[in-house]
Length: 103
Figure 1: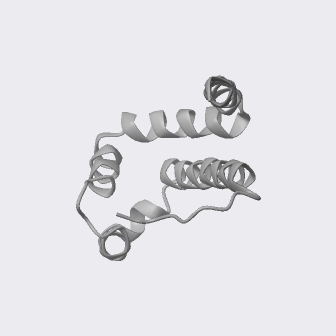
Figure 2 (figure 1 turned 90 degrees about the vertical axis):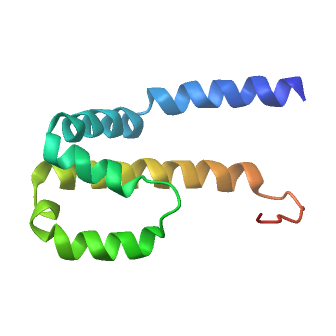
């Protein structure tokens, strides 16, 4: 078990060193530096909210913001890091047989 944990820590270091992650952090910082965009980011990341409904509402309300290059760059970077993490998770779980119970 200790080896799995150690290797997962190494994997974490590799992910943090990846271009996808560095781009994500850079674009997130640019987004947070803009007060208006930062408020929208916080709204999207609230707990207890249906993200789909929230995104539909935000799309209607902030359509013009979605065309902002800072927002667009961040969303693209976020999508790339999510894809990378999904590939990592899929690779880790490949061949494992277990039942997952969603609480």
